[in-house]
Image (tube, rainbow, N blue to C red; front, side, top):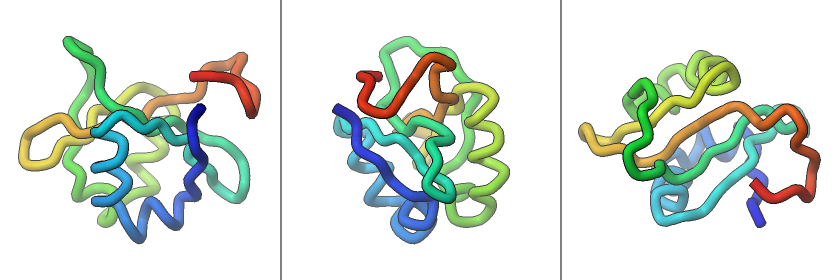
Length: 97
């Protein structure tokens, strides 16, 4: 089952969140208590646009907005670390991702 993470925690501790996602954890990102996106590990051979992890603390609002529209691979020194993507339309709290 996925965990929830508020955007504030993601902004304050982006390295920890990305490291946990890269090791297999999946998070539902909450903004003002509402689910807005998924942070998860990348899948083998997945084709997504790449964005640097520095955007998490420099301009998280834009990165989250992009991740709500389409899947975005977050990289750390060029290595794919995590993916932020939209929630499935039919997703409800408690559903598996």
